[in-house]
Image (cartoon, rainbow, N blue to C red; front, side, top):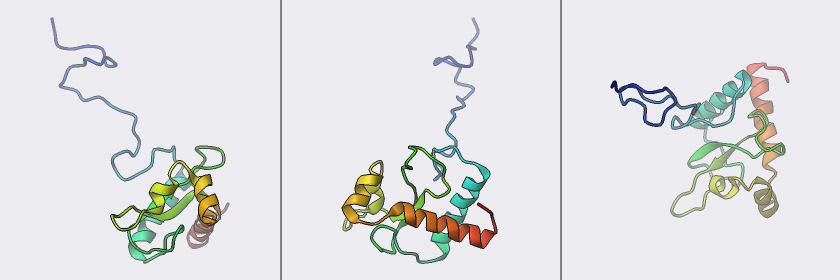
Length: 134
């Protein structure tokens, strides 16, 4: 008997790795489906955080910023108008990213900072700099 099995078997031959449908996982990306505009905005925001010292959209800190996909009102909406720059958790400071993750609306109520408005502002700046229409 040969060592070959069906391609979708959990006991597939070890010579061929499984092809998983994880788009940008484990590569510093997002699990959301991205259009061409979404990808361009995501990359632009990444370059922006590396090139400039920007404040966190939640607390104003300038260290360890990450791009954060907000839970859209539609629960899983587009990346455009839904990316905020938030700080990561450190031993001395609880990061805004971990506090708002999966609890965006509650975070907005607690802090009084409208992250959706800040995300729309980032998108407007991106459209202005790249010349993309709405």
